[in-house]
Length: 397
Image (cartoon, rainbow, N blue to C red; front, side):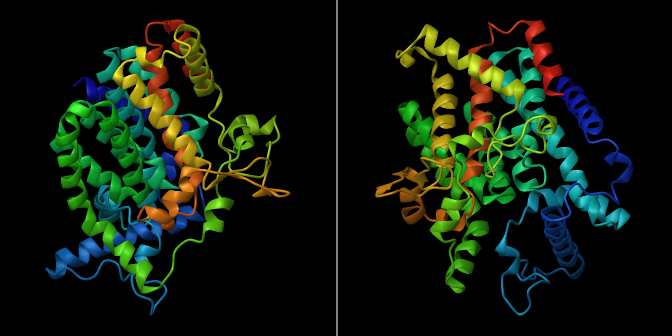
């Protein structure tokens, strides 16, 4: 029952933040570019489900009604099948395509807040800490940066997967692993990174965890393998130049997004990707790191396993967000004869299946923000007074 009221709270906050969208679900959209493309993807999924049920046969979902005569056109981007199923009843009843996008946009706020509340509550046993974590991350600038990209904005399947993994409810973890991977293939790799760190820190459970990972991968493979087929069929992968161009640079961490009201007062620091976390989240994370190094300095082994888990996963995903090579200055690959510093993403691009299909390494910063938010709240849970939490919540709004 408590979870129900928490969900209602996040729904009300989401309606308030997105006002007046709730009264214009069938006529307004926040983004006329990617938003309309995603609307088409969701509605094609819904059309396929309705056709499959009405005709009692499964036609090829991947050969969509776009780019004829090319095959597998749905696989030129994300399927977002779970989000399509969520919107299906409303779209069928009202026959309005925009409902698919706007419903998932609203739920992207509410469910992300709820899932983070559940995750942090399980780690801290504190309602006030968990509520603050859900609100501050959900309405942070770094999350809002991706609101036009529903597949990334809807982080809740990923967060629930992490929760059930940590709680050792592995069968439910496998379910949300599948839902996450069908939301976006990038979440599949987010989870692989988290699991790699988890197995490293929990070696005694490694065999059991790897067994369920294999099971989760087997369930997911039939949905991800068609991407591999399309890549081979058209003999196409994203060029390494794309990954370099769409990687983060250090200056981007201070780059103010138009999703932040601060952008009206502070000019962007670069023309790159906005990766500023926002005031509330930045204050929390910076304070947590200061407290960490004051207390432990180099003795990070004193951290709990779960604190190490989120701290290290956030660090590794930050490194991946910088892409194939570290830019010394803005937009540089070389400084005279000195090349930029190669990073692990370069090896992953050539060696790990699927990595060459991603254009935008900078999106790994979203996992960094999520992991360091959780780390900040569990590490600082005894240092954050009610007044501080209220102040951070008010500041984010």
